[in-house]
Image (cartoon, rainbow, N blue to C red; front, side, top):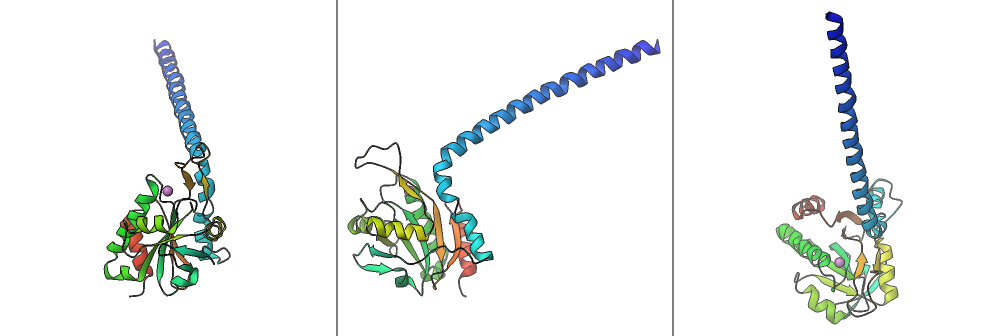
Length: 230
Ligand code: NI
């Protein structure tokens, strides 16, 4: 009597053991497959942007650890008040620099709002930081357009534009990626793809920190405050 019972139990156990992992395994496989599919879609969709973003983030830490790669450099541009300026024009002041364009439907306005909010969050110390918006769309963003745009965000915000070559040089210095969106028609309403970082520069023009576009205002403010002299 004991033997058949043991066999039955073993079989029952086997059956259970056999089916349970199989179905769990199938679920895992399905979940894995779906995860891979979602990742593939995300990676595919973000590939253009990631391509542009890939450089700055790792290089920021590389800059701080090895000092071999730098963010920032010489540029000559035209301010929203029509003055010719270079990177040296901002020496002596900490800077928050963002590259974008005034026709941007959502990301740029959000980032510039955040930049202004960070400066407010810093209180009195915020006076040491100059917010700078550099266009990557010089065809549409002339000084007048920049002037009406930046004043909507912060009274001290500086808008910079330039020729196509001047903008390309500035963007290259900051490892900024930008391009006209590929599936846009060649009309006045085209969109631009561009990387989404806020560069925190010291009064000597050296890069201090880089904030990605999703960073909370409080975190940016505390990282800036930590770098500012007391
Ligand atoms: Ni934008």
